[in-house]
Length: 254
Image 1: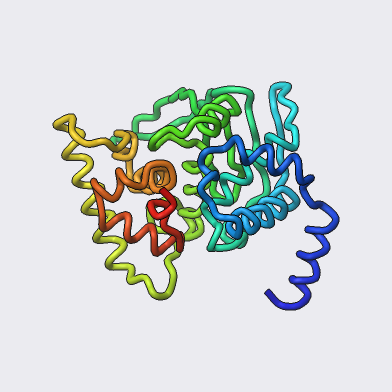
Image 2 (image 1 turned 45 degrees about the vertical axis):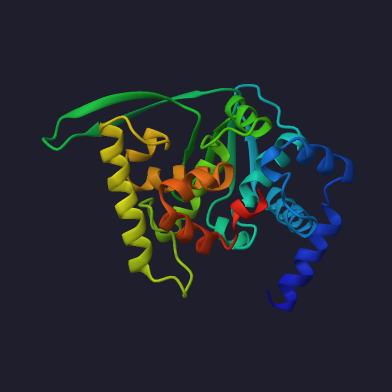
């Protein structure tokens, strides 16, 4: 950051500082964050404070979002950018939260031009340059109990990282020291292997990851933070790529 950005950040942190008791009591109930060391928790608090200040939180269908609820969402989202920085969540502004799973209806056109009207019930959704949409019931379920490979906040914000390249395709912008060929080779082979395993009802990874490369990336990010040992056992080269991308090693915290 240049000096003007540093001054602005310092002023935001002073003026909009999260109350100590609210921060400590809230993250103490989140098993995903318990194994962070003191320095990591302090940095996460800074990112969470800035995130809550910069983003707009909207509760719908009568849901009233408390500061605790905002912290739960923001802190777990910011775990993904703990060593990347808030710029990785730039280009969009809103988090919309429903009380529970929400229904969406969209028209799709298949390969022969037939238009279909599809209705789905979702726990979360991310729009390119648009909001992240979450079901609070699902956020609560995934936040208070560590569920291997199941975390709606991690999933939807992983899509936001993926979309930094313009669209969700399983290829987020990589660091300069990360060859694109290694990322593509590792994740593509794992994706194809997963699809073969699902056909034979094998493997521990959520079958939803086989939908497309974008969903594969979002799902393996869920496992990377909630059950890293599974990724290491199933796809060690993918784990190495994620470790280099996120600049952290969740397995070492366990």
